[in-house]
Length: 237
Image (cartoon, rainbow, N blue to C red; front, top):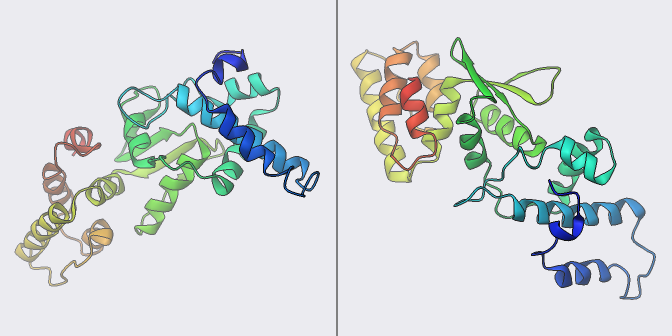
């Protein structure tokens, strides 16, 4: 990260940022905005410029190595913990419109320094707290679980729920094709409970005691080529 903030904001729309800041002062409200809210707004401008300058070519995923908590803390002169707290609060108050956590996760899976697989579990170093919480929410909402560590950047996800995520990124038509395939396999094994929802497909396969490994492997093989997890999961399963 460049230490010169002028370079950081070189291509940033500073006029728009000033208008947003001025709205809190020059509309018969001078001095009403709190110090904490002013700092959050200034942090928002900083993060927008940082993200704009560090997107990986051809997408909305940022280069997390260039935007680490440490580098930000060094430039702003605050602790890494405060950086993480500001990131979370900024996303709650000023959410990033083009943030696609699925794409960010897929990019991390191809970084061998951030990920390893042990006994069917993905152990991933998640550099951004908002990305961490988005992944955790998805897995838990799908009936799965994540293993938390004292190091709040480490996330463990069973590989089945990584496949669940990949399936949900497919088109409605492709999701239904995978669902039909799974139900055919379950019926073939004389399991009577039909799976009706793609969002619980993994949970139901595991609960029925079916040949989970074989069925999940077949489902992974049906992922479309443009799915961000396709190649990676097909190799894993």
